[in-house]
Every structure is written in C-alpha cells, then in structure tokens.
Length: 123
Image 1 (cartoon, rainbow, N blue to C red):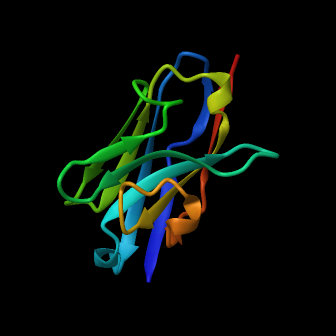
Image 2: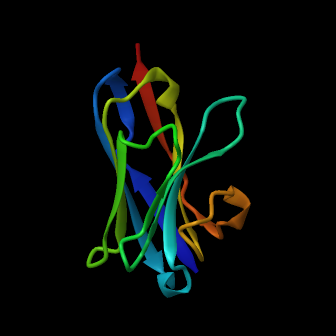
C-alpha cells in the first residue's frame, strides 16, 4: 500500500556530495517515520538515518553523523538524504524505508522499502 522510489545516486569522488531523494506514494499515513539504509556487497543492510515524519526528530548512525543530513518535505511526501564528505566506505546500495518509529535501526522493523539507488565513491 506504500510505494517508495529512490533517486539521486551516482558516482562521486571522495569528499564529494550527493543528495538522495525518496518519493513516497500510497497509504503513507500508516508510517510515522522514514529511514535510509545501505548495503554493500557481502555485508548486511545497515541503518544510516531516520526521521519522524512530523516533529522533526532524527536519528543517525555514528558512521554518518556530522556528514549526512536527513530531511523531509511533507508537501511533496519526500524524504532526502544529503550526503557530504563522502568516503569510499560509503559505497553501497541505498534504500529508503518506512516504519512506525524513527528510533528503529533494525531493518526488520521497517515495513516498506524502495528499490534502492547505487552510490559509488571513488578514492
């Protein structure tokens, strides 16, 4: 009932920036939070950031804190991930997801997922 579509990924040099977007459609009222996860080949999917759809509360993984910023545009029903000072270790397939709490960091607690957008950071 909820569709999420990511965009904005690409190839960037270390130290560069990218802004990912996730457009939500469908019955999004059932989810109170949106999050970003990433998964590199051979690794488990890991939490990146999450935001409460109303209230402004955010949650960040330690690995991205201070470099990434999650935000929402409720009028457009879109969540963004501004990624600055990118590092090669940020290379992964990035997914947006919807959940019932921005405090959730376990991907198994997220109910809806986008298809992912690839971010590759060269050294």
